[in-house]
Length: 264
Length: 67
Image 1 (cartoon, each protein chain N blue to C red):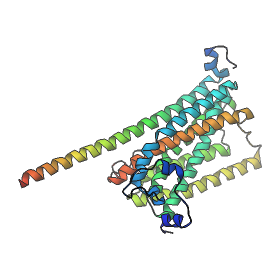
Image 2 (image 1 turned 135 degrees about the horizontal axis):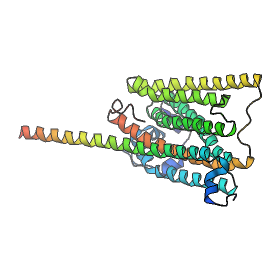
Image 3 (image 1 turned 90 degrees about the vertical axis):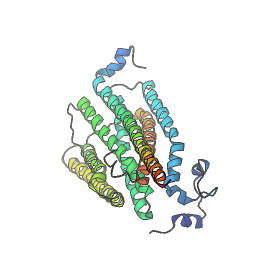
Image 4 (image 1 turned 120 degrees about the vertical axis):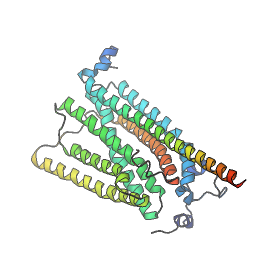
């Protein structure tokens, strides 16, 4: 698996993406920009610093658009609560998929940078999992009169939160950078499979027993404002992940990983 | 628009506590995360700055010893 990835891409006539070329950082190699530059921590550090403001502004714009849209539509009460709750659930699942994806890429290519991307995304995923649980509890209290419904969604979200906590604890539990990277990969892959199993087990069990909990998207008009808010949260996650990636690259570069292991 | 006053907007049809409780906590967490990351970056830069100063001091001492 540890082939020369850059040569493999070039051999198939695949060029580095235009966005990457347009924002290229002059490196020791001069003008030529190759795929392997995407795996070069120093160049990615500079690149991330250069494009960092964009996702921050896009996040502000999309969040403002989403909430304005929902207010113009006249959404209020519990419907407004769903405006943050459902996008937070989407993000919590999506960011775990991103963590699994990049740590598997890192394992396949045998390079450090994809692992760092995975570890840069993980804490934000954990935060959105907590926010999904928090707003879910408020939603349940407002609609059902109880803080805890215990449907498949909520149970799986708790399992996902536990998985996120475990991933966040790994740098302090495991010694050695390469071992930490591999541990994050294994735990993310196995853990997210387990979360999916939990979801379908509880879902199946409850369908077997009683009627399923009705969906939260009571009003279909809510979908578009929600997608805008979801996009805003996604750009926010990108911004924060870029910031954290830059910190992680510097920490690895100067051997500070042990010193800063407990920082998220 | 369905609101006739600011108070009605914050009341959120009786669900104000739940809606604003969710909104404030979400945006509070997001802002806190950005602040934490800025502090983390600053901590790294401070650490590296100190390391660089120490290196420079060591280099001076070495030179002083040699001359």
